[in-house]
Length: 102
Image (cartoon, rainbow, N blue to C red; front, side, top):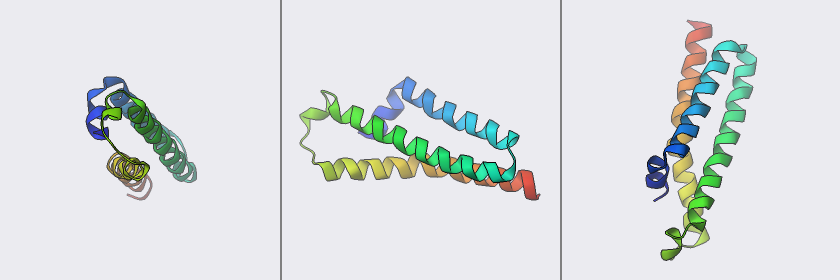
């Protein structure tokens, strides 16, 4: 439900790709030590972004029709975080390796 809502709302998807693009630009510009700090900041920021999206969906009229407990929402946050945060971090780390060590 959370991923489906995320992909259907264009504003959420656009914001996600804006974070991704800005971070790539900063990785190219900043020195290597700042890149790693940027990745940590990206992870924290995207985690909070996903948590806010999940709670926004949880408060919606549509989600109130389903009987869900707090643990299932926490599980949804974990699944969505793994699917939306991990791939960009792998891309960022590969970009850093290619730019600085190859």
